[in-house]
Length: 163
Length: 143
Image (cartoon, rainbow over all chains, first blue to last red; front, side):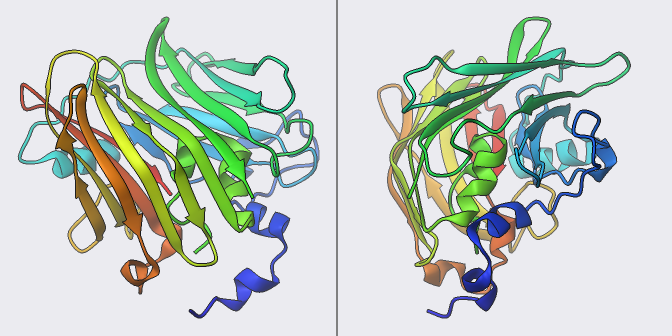
């Protein structure tokens, strides 16, 4: 099999971050949202919520996880995918979100990072600081959840081991 | 090619992009919740970035409220980035079999031959569940 040269010459970190190609301002406490490059969305039809991620390319590498209502375009595409069956969708406003990060080798409890929707905003963005030991090379459990006035409206999770 | 067949977007932030930087990723568990409808659990997931091969030992789609009518998983190339498998974008589809708790799939595999000519940076996975009333519920995630 022919492996693209770019894969061979890029360093692991460059590969990891290159996929996101983020450019952020110097002050990490006040990142300019427009400069973040968000990943492709995960979308769930039940409450019409999408989740995307951006990563600060500098160390420590804070990750941002954005929970937002699905766009009208995305909803229409999803309805088309569901055809001929109807797509049952019950959009609810996101009022809070959290990301749970558990390093499985440190015997410490999981850290849960929270965010709420800002006034006038429909989305919640959770900042997740780079864990001790970095994002690479250690098993971790990550769960993402969004709530609408206390009701769970989005949830996914995974336990990953990198080799 | 560096984001192949790992439902990375099941996980958060840097970890998902980190998937791209190493030769092998294993996921012991991933789960997606369709609140009030069903919950999907994947079993052991192996991804070999170099060989461009991936597998998931099994996927269980468990009903939360009432029986489910059908369930499927589709891997697709999201050329137009609308998050859905449009005509010509399908890479491989898997139809789930009925189980005691809902539906399940076993030994899902995708090899390099099935990805020939595909833009691997646009590969996505769609989980589709149809409930007893015929209503469809969909979760899509980049991989």
